[in-house]
Amino acid sequence: MPRASDILVILTYAMVAIVAALAFDRFGLMSAELAWMMGALVFLIGGQVHASVARAEERKLFEDEIHLLKAANMSMLDELSSAQDRIEALAETAVATKPRTAEASAPATQESALELSQPIQATGDPQNADERLVAEILARLEGGGRAAPVAAQTPDAVDLVRRALDDNRVDLYLQPVVGLPQRRTYFYEGYTRIRDENGQVLGPGEFLAAAEEAGLITDVDNLLLLRCVQIVRRLTKSDRRVGVFCNVSIRSLADEDFFPAFLDFLRRNSDLAGALIFELPRAQFENRSATAARNMARLADFGFRFSIDQVNDLNIDLAELQRAGVRFIKVAGDRLIAAAHGAEPIAGREPGALRPEDVAGLFARYGVDLVAEKIEVESTVVEVLDLDVAYAQGHLFGAPRPVRDEVLNEADNKLRRAAG
Image 1 (cartoon, helix red, strand yellow):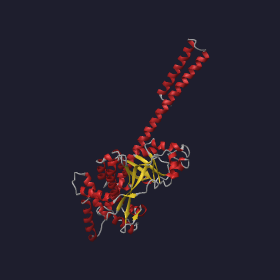
Image 2: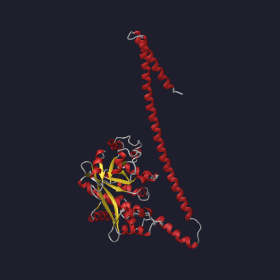
Image 3: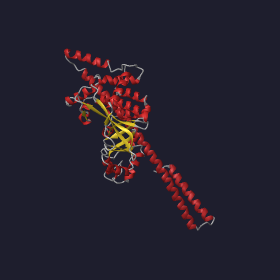
Image 4: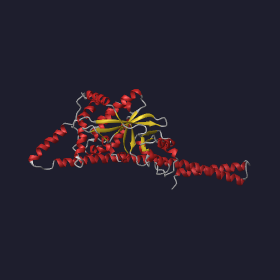
């Protein structure tokens, strides 16, 4: 049923049309038939204007309702996450209090009390958040904060990661990310590599899965993040336009034991927000927990931004990326070229609906820059340039290279001095 206000508006336009027709006829400006036709035209135009305004208002109301629903959904996810944590805590309590023999129960109770009463603490000044953070990381790297290996993992792989952490054989590699078409280096991407006892460098495929499942990935990420901060400090001394993409696991962002100290560290180093970008795989981003999403939002509040890599297709929710503080999307150059020329949907658009040169502009409207990665040959660069993509990365512009040992040693010494 039409609203009363709409009926009044329609009646008002009808009266205006009738008055206009009578005026045209009264003053002899046109014939009676033409005057009434003009009146009808005035009524139709007024009705169309009103309908357009009403539709715009309804669309705004609908968008507001959708926003409220999404906010309510996030709140519900937070509540569900909290409820799940409470359920897990209750389940652990039930298991811990299950009747056992006298011989088995006493030692276990002592160990549980020890674990609960002696969390990892900083050894430096308790008023200095940097020192607390550094001390906690160093303690974890000594073995105090690590989870036990998962049985499904190969013991050799887990032991290799643990020994590399213990012996400080975790290296930072940097690969340039250049701007197009000048090919000036604007960023570096930081990678973690570990060395075995013989000095052989292992790629991520040889240790990341083991570190993830064994609960060691947070230790690896923590060391990488701190070294990235040190490298950013050195780089920005000579050129403040240079930044670093720092790979991070979603598990680290969801680690409520470590994240508060790390957040405080970044808050007090917020001048690095424009130069330090946290990068995570698309699958981890889209399947992030409510805790990880909340912690990402807290980092974004301090100005830090995110990058998404391992993108298998461009059918991405750009509004969601914008809300989450994602600033960069990395896509293999060949896939980006194929998608731009109609091989697959892009951001909800049908294949071929966008002109190739408009793809980067669409992402930019949501504050997201495309990075064409895995560029190996010049011919790919030529095609990427036609797409007006701002940044590129690949072995053509430079392979990942290790940061010199003396630079890392200097950074580690600073961290250890800060920890006392």
